[in-house]
Image (cartoon, rainbow, N blue to C red; front, side):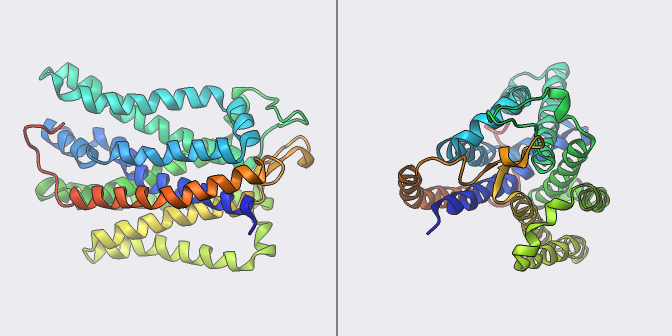
Length: 338
């Protein structure tokens, strides 16, 4: 078994799990200011209150696995994205403290401040995730020393920003579908209208981003020649996107949410297939690129990690399943609610 390839795939699984689970969390935050009433905003926060911290475990695990399995890639990535990662860290902290502090006082100013903090933290974090993906697809100026030879402005390229905005629209759609599942009454009716708006924004950006990628980054599809079966995922992705409005139209929000999850999973797969076997592509010289072999830890390390993952992942999945089952159903505000 090719253990390097296995860990490339496992990193993809962890990233996909994070994008799906924290994706709707971030989407709820992006939509937070769309409601005005204090009660509605509390409903939004409480819809993700029992779940958000567990969802972020997937991101922490992804970072730890990247460090252990591909330390060269980890080091180069942080040298390239150090400032954006610090901004991301503050954004993720900002989301957490906004939820915890908002309801501590009745003051409209106090609550208004934390409402805006919750929104901007969610928006910035999502945008940065998308910009990172866009830069990974474009490639980075990585030299023979495996260091990033550029500045932060080099990361703010139009294509990377486009991908960032696309991810914001996708998570907003994902979050609106989730909120429709968790709310009821007049608020749910309003969110139903949001789903259509967020979907059409997402669809327009999906078409634009796909077209720009095919025209300006043709190497993103090179692996489809070597792995023609990957076209199946492309077809399934298009069908999943088309099924979201169908499910909403027929009043099946859970089906729409599952389809939205499948859409995000497909995008993560296509991101991986566009990079493989590279982890970071060098724009200075392709020979300087970091791939699943030249950036990996020793075989012994990877095998030990595989054993640990085989023992630990079932517990993570079981914990996630239990939490989601326990907090299923509509949001009910109580004494200990946010």
